[in-house]
Length: 168
Image 1 (cartoon, helix red, strand yellow):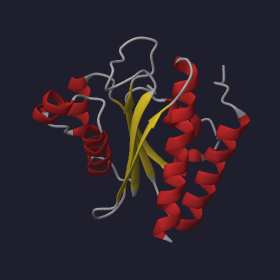
Image 2 (cartoon, one colour):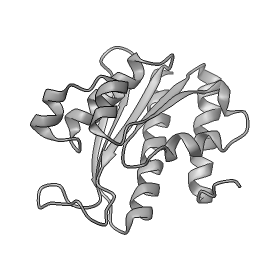
Image 3 (cartoon, rainbow, N blue to C red):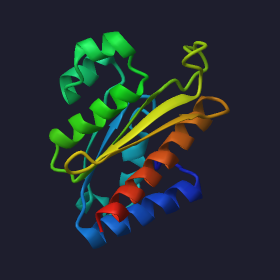
Image 4 (tube, rainbow, N blue to C red):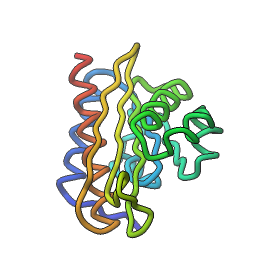
């Protein structure tokens, strides 16, 4: 059974795949709060294997450490839902893949788990490219869990599109 993503998100994913093919760019994803939805959205489109290198689903801190090389000290100091960890996840995905761009997301999709400083809906995004090129976004999305996760996918796709366009 195929996963159904909203048409606007599938359109973004398709636009990203076309841009990546034109520019010879491969991508990787490092996902926590989305649990693989970014990679699933991209691979829902036939022929995406020439662009998508791999996806890391690193829901647990141990997975962030083991698969992406996020330091335990960083996780303990700032927590998994932080700008610093999103950056480390993106850098780790880039270093542990054959991709030219990597996007990472870590957040609190809800309904529980939020605090005053890290509310439900908070997501940190990072996109890493060659050299020190890293873009980041901190967004607090309104709505319930599914809405937060899909909005995170849309933002991640936009960041990858921006990353490809900056390379050209």
